[in-house]
Image 1 (cartoon, one colour):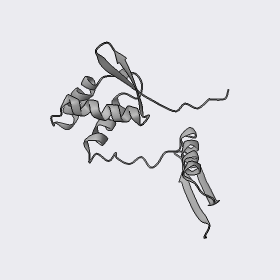
Image 2 (cartoon, helix red, strand yellow):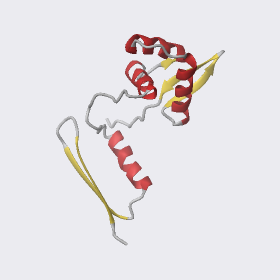
Image 3 (cartoon, helix red, strand yellow):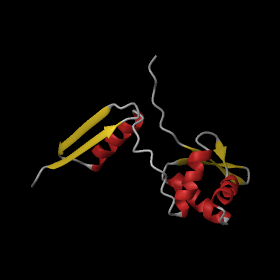
Image 4 (cartoon, helix red, strand yellow):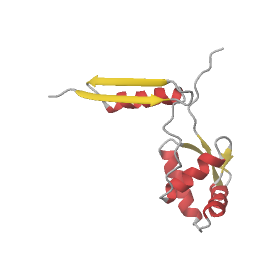
Length: 129
C-alpha cells in the first residue's frame, strides 16, 4: 500500500509562508486539526468574492457580513436578503437554512419568547500579553 502524502502551502496576509507536509497514516481528523490550527493563526484562504450561486450561500453571506457579532432573527435576515438581492424569499426558507446552520455548529440558536434568535459562533484564540 502506498503512503499517503499531503502538502499544504499557505501565505498569510503579512507575507509569512507556511509549508505543511503530512505523510503516512493521514486521516480526516488530522487534516481537520491542521485547518483548526490555520484558523487559530488567522490564516484564511484567498479573499475571493463569496460564491453566491445558491440560496444558502446568499443567506450565509448576509449573516457573515452583517452579523459577525450580536444576535439576529430570521426576520432581520429576510429584510437584508430582499434589500441586497432584490428578490423575494419566504421566511420559512430562511428559518430552515438558519436551523441547518445551527445543526452544523456555525451559529447558536436560542428561543426568545415566540421566536428564535441566532448568533454566529467564532473560534477565539487566547492572546498572550
